[in-house]
Length: 311
Image 1 (cartoon, rainbow, N blue to C red):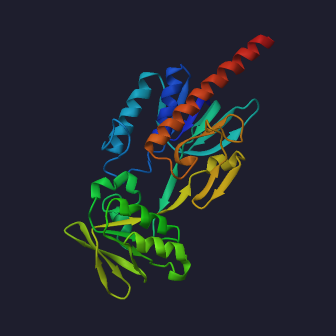
Image 2 (tube, rainbow, N blue to C red):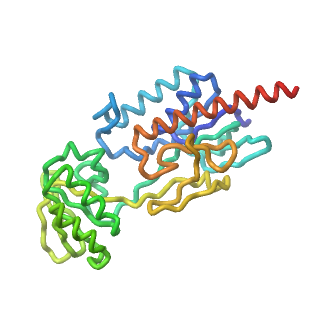
C-alpha cells in the first residue's frame, strides 16, 4: 500500500528538518526521508550559526528530529531512489527499502557530496586539520601555519581568503601549472604574503595524530599545521533530474534553477540547502527550508480554497 502525505521532504539535514518543522507546525501531514549522510558529518563542530556556534552537527540534527516529532512529522531512515510525477501534481517516491510514498508537494534537500583530491592522508584528516571553509573553521586554527592545496586555478581565491586568519600561508600548486595563474593572481598572492610552491603534493606528514607537514613528490617537506583544500562539489540532484527540473551549470556543479523560495521549474517541487547551491551554510540551509515550507503551506491552502469555491 502506498502511504499518502501532503508533503514529502527528501533529505534529513538542516534544510529538510527546517522545512518539516514549518510544515508540521502548519498541521501538514509531512514525511522526512533521511538517508543519514549529512555533508558536515566529518566536522566536530559547526560555527557561524547564531546561538548554536560551536555545537556538534550531530547534536544539532538530533534536536531538530526531536522538534519535528512534536508536531506529528514522520521521519524514516531510508533513501529515495526514484520519483515519478502523476496527475494533479502528485509525486510518488520509491525508497530503497521497497516502500513507496506519495505526496502533493516535494522538497528536495539531498545536498551535495565532497569529492576530495586523491592525495594520501587528505580524506583521513578531513574535518580535523584538513579543512575546506575558513568561515567554518578559521577561528579555531587562527595564526597557525596554513597550507592551501590547489585543485584548480580557482584555489587562488581560497589562498587569499585564508590570510584573514593567518599570515603564514603556503600555496601548493600541486597539479596546477604556474602558467595557469594570471598576473593578477600572482600580484595578489605576493601582496598577501602567500608563498607559492610548485610541484605535485605526494602526501601529508602526520605525527602523534596531528598534521605537521606537506610532502612533495620530490621528497621535500614543508612544515604546516593546517591544510585547506577545495573539494570538488558533486550535487545530489538525481531526483530533480528525473523530474525534468532545469539545471544551471556553475563552476561548482549543476544546480536547479529556483526562485527566491526554492521553487524549481517543476510545479510542486522545491529545493533547499546544498541541493540548490554550493555555498549554502547551515544557517542558510535553515532559512531556505523555512521559506520553502511556508510557501508550500500557503500554496496548498489557496489551492484547496479555490477548489472549494469551484465546487
